[in-house]
Image 1 (cartoon, helix red, strand yellow):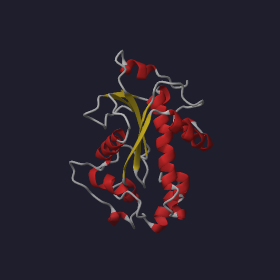
Image 2 (cartoon, rainbow, N blue to C red):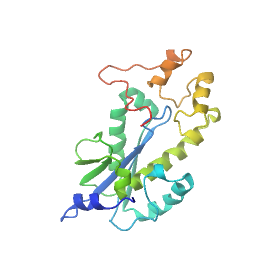
Image 3 (cartoon, rainbow, N blue to C red):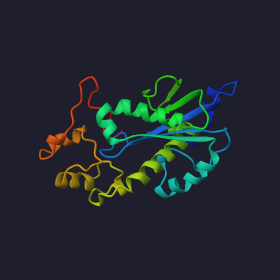
Image 4 (tube, rainbow, N blue to C red):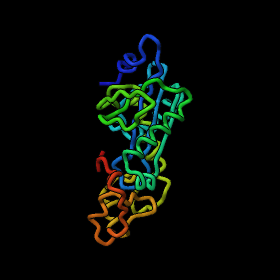
Length: 222
């Protein structure tokens, strides 16, 4: 089923509250930042074929980007780097990235639709959690496409060809895992991640944070 405006319409109410849809990408990667995108629309029909980014081919996602940019009322991006993730943990890194995305919007939303079952945004925005929100909500679907395209494009520019970041975007593909075993982590890798536990020759590089922060890895393949 294609996403609709049913959630946005419910949340905007008779007063026409501004609703933003949010999605993130990069949570389960071993290298690179986590990227969050926030999208506000005017409830006009979206570009044809818009849906969850995971259901679209790379070519279709790329073709949608300029269409989404000209259609959306507002788009905001926020990121937290790999070093920030190592320092504060993934939950806090996601919160910071989401706040940066929301604050980058040209209009301030009154309420946020967040893809997933965990509110990592918090105050001051009221949040509506929506599992598989990128399949149900048009604004979240747009955010999912834009976030993925932005992060993928960045990962393709950072070099380290033997790790194939241009293809795997820092996720643990066989090529990526093989390069790690041979060459160890790059300057772009998250050194607090548990993959280092399985690499004895590089295990000494692992960063251990205060137990109150935790390991920061919400989900390896999230």
